[in-house]
Image 1 (tube, rainbow, N blue to C red):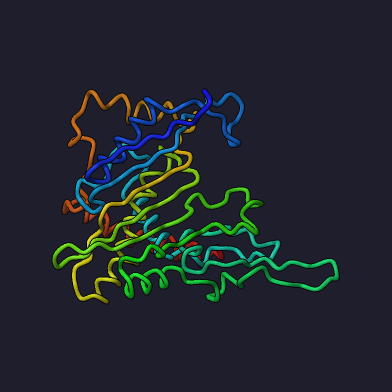
Image 2: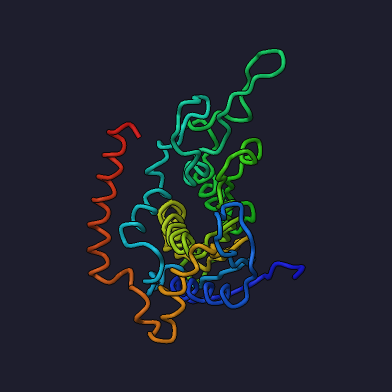
Length: 302
């Protein structure tokens, strides 16, 4: 085969779109090696994928098959809202072994940290001094730009920092977020395009999409709603993954937890309603657990 397949699926809600994407990938993706394969790991299944979710906040949102639980979703949403940005390491401290980045930190404090020494022995800093509150706050800038001009085509955020990410072992998978507002009667609809360079379809994609939906609601749509004084809903979200893949090592779990159950269960049996009172109760309990977990990690010094 000469070409990587380009696949496109749609769904009215998140759980439906996620399921459609996994089915299409498994049926039409191609076998590929990865740099993370070990020993006799089977080849991965891979494709370029576009997933369009027409109503991102519509229930049922949660697919039972994703490899995680409600507490994992709550923790990931906290991470995307910035609760772990202080876990990012100081790039100028060789003994600092904390994280290379968080997505929120790259979006809200984009910039370079690493000091460079030129041939003359003097030190310089690449572009901006990030990780200190002095980088570019792209989140605020996007909200401000959409407030001034809802139809702008320039409301975007990026994570990639080419002066360092080519040398990072595990650079950001999320690359960009692009927004535009449409007006429908007395309401505004926030449309969003998301681009991932690499997206683990089984191990991470559902949490990624669920988390970005909550990020869009809390950090983009809600501030715009306050500014305009009218309802801002989440319009369609288009998710583009250059490499949308299931790792070979995960194929057995994927088959048993997802694929084999498609014919023996109904869609309703395979999903949770996020706004179900029971799920909301678990969500609230998970919030307290995750906050304690972060606090305990901080007390141990990270």
